[in-house]
Length: 101
Image (cartoon, rainbow, N blue to C red; front, top):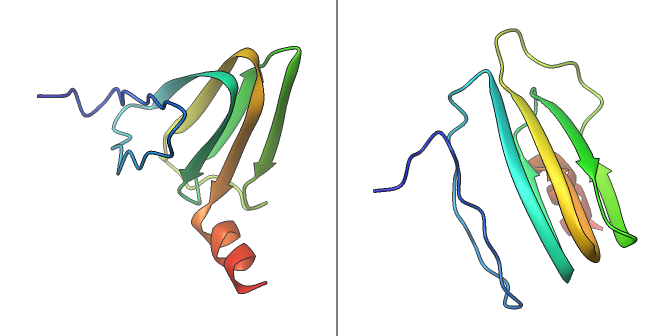
């Protein structure tokens, strides 16, 4: 059984749906190691999201809403590593807007 408070997010060259991760701690760290692929994280609105790290040939596209975090909501810290690739961090709202266009 997987520990629900520490999501294990791994991806290969194939697109993979990881499902839902429960954010139960006050601070949740997610490590993303990208080797010239594309990683997309859909995050809930109303939480604080920070991204750090990256690689020499990496790009990050952060599209979260400009709304303040909700009181008592967890903080999501995304740590990016690897030589390159693209990391997208979006909210469900941003994804819906892109699908409509």
